[in-house]
Image 1 (cartoon, rainbow, N blue to C red):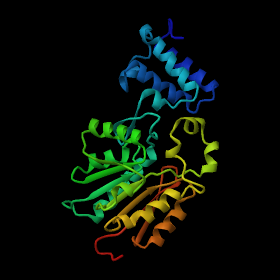
Image 2 (image 1 turned 90 degrees about the vertical axis):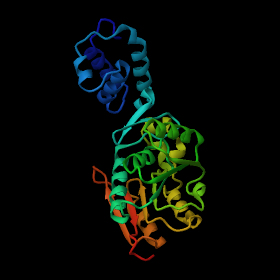
Image 3 (image 1 turned 180 degrees about the horizontal axis):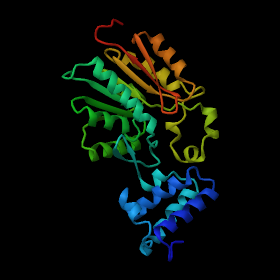
Image 4 (image 1 turned 45 degrees about the horizontal axis):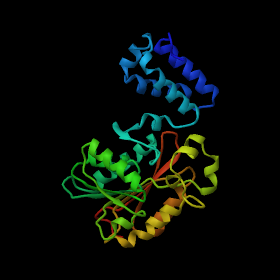
Length: 293
């Protein structure tokens, strides 16, 4: 592999090999890996296509393609994933950030701009932060906010802390189960992309997800709704319920979670947000300062 090949030929061969191995999106994965190994991106990557493949990179390239063929996510091989235009380190200790979660951040920011004045001291927390993608993005886009983030995994929090430092933001990281680490703390905005896959469905997930991403970030209990119920029960730990709650969830769960938020009685407005495929992917509860609980 690669000896005497151009970069373009190496890409084509790897794409074909990955496709035969049953890899999902083989061409996209081959491009991601080749960009990483060559250390070039965008226009520079395409300019290198007719150039000879660097012989000194042959072993790294073969290793990357072999790992991908065995089912390992490309993001773990590369060690990074972009989210909302920001770079994030990812390892098997954290869930890989997905593009649809960017829509959750956008929805929360939009509602926050409506609920809070620009000079308000807003306290936001990201529960089950993983890589820190949501928390770091909020802190980056709203530097005046005080942002906290929690996770039950100490290893995940270490990665999230590195991502916060790399992106130049300050976040209050706390280890513990869902809202428990923030007991007694002021929380104006609660955002969470918790585990929501029903336990019995995990075996049927794509091997890349099932066999490589952390199960604690996937398993939402028998019906996938356990973390949401616990967080709503834990609201009694806070001095007051958040004015905005934003949850990401799985396909077919939106109406159940909307009902849970409505039953809690803290948010007069319940908003369901679809993703780009039209799937109801996020549910928000909103209470303005004028609305009485």
